[in-house]
Amino acid sequence: MFILRVHSVDTELPLTDAEEIEFYTTTSLSNPNPKFRERRGVVHLYRKASQSSLPNPSSRSTSLFVVAVPKYLSAADFIRFAGSHIENITYILFIWNDGMEDRYSVLIELAAQSAADAFYFSLNGKRFSPAEAELCHILFTHSVEYTELGEIASTPPVGFTELPTCPICLERLDPDTSGILSTFCDHSFQCSCTSKWTYLSCTVCRFCQQQEENPVCSICGSGENLWICLICGFMGCGRYKEGHGVRHWKDTQHCYSLELISQQIWDYAGDGYVHRLTHSKVDGKPVEINSRCTSIEGTCHSCGYGDDSGINEAIYSSKVEAVFDEYSRLLATELEKQRQNYESLLAEAKGKRDSTIAEAVEKAVTSEMQDIQSKLDKCTEEKNALAEINRKLIKDQVVWHVKVKEIEEREASESRLMDEKILDLEEQVRDLKVYIEAQKTLTDMTDSDSIKGGTVLPVPSTQSSSTNTRRHKKAGRRRN
Image (cartoon, rainbow, N blue to C red; front, side, top):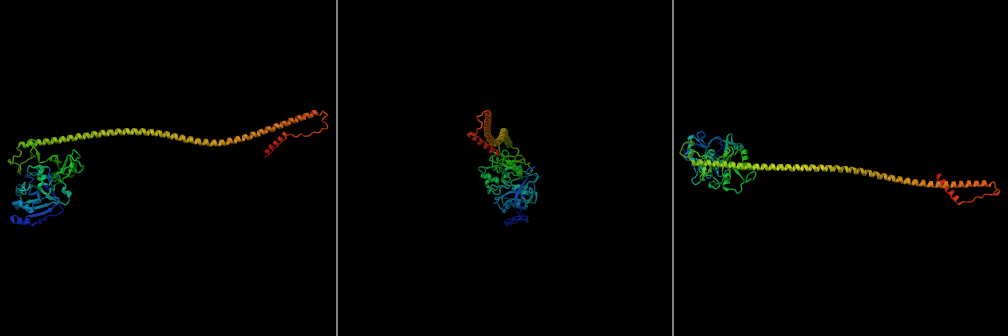
């Protein structure tokens, strides 16, 4: 089951080219008033994830969607391509996308289910031109929504998955997913079919055709395990590197990505491969996966699908190899993660050890420095105290020196005075001795008549005069 959401800011307009109208009016008389319309917009194609996309009685409708019509085929050429089925068409809408220079899409409404079935089986898978490679891919659609908001148009409804609108990318998918049954071409790098589209507006097809030498992840720049989104062409690395492809799916809900190396398509939502072709392990030839009968009921028993044991064995072998490769990659990735984990643990342990040693050394050095600083401060305090004491002692020394000098001078002066006093006393004692002796002599001589009537004359004495002089000086000093 398919639905369409068209991001368009324009309204439907009548087809401006009069050639289509003239062609229709000259070839169809049973349906004289069909609606030929055109509109510009971006088409988003969605399928119901829980159901097969191949046509069956429950998924058919009277609305058909032609995925891609090459630009060299004009609207008139497409009407000619429809041939006699144009008589049963009631409405045709040509959807032009400015970003797609090589193709456009067509939405067709038919009068009855039988007419829609006839149109589908007659033209689906048919070449638009015998000389060209492009095939007509038609899908039954159940609803079409138009919106002016790109976010709404690009958001898948609940239970639906977006598909690419590029016909080549659709052919890469398995028929259950894309609803397309086509030729056995894997559209790989070696195929020339993609070059038949004139401009290759699809990013994936353009990449396959141009084969960039060094493709890298759009986010991290990694060149290993790359996947390209089939919806928008985003280039991301796989889950075994940085996982930017998976993140892109989680952010945009674009489920389908093409692995560049194996050319296999992975469905993130279904968590499995949905590529249409793989290489058989029996003979090395490409075989189609999930090949089915092309009849609507699926019970014709004439096409041979499902009865070929070689194909089944090839499919089984291919699936086994895919699972083996997947688990090998998973194991290698897990081992790499474990290696990185243990290396990180070792680095963390080494870092902790170095940090512990550095902290211990720093703590010891800090403690030692604190002790040395404490001792230095103590010594500085003692030095300052001793310096202060020294200053006081020097000051006291000066004071005491002055005092000692004064005392010495005073003692010297007193000593001189004492000497003078002693000398004076000695002179006085001598004078007294002289006097006493004189008195005694006089007493003794009183009895003698020799001194009677005599006269006593003073005898000058140098010593006495000098002694008297000193005495007078002392007396003068005392008075002073």
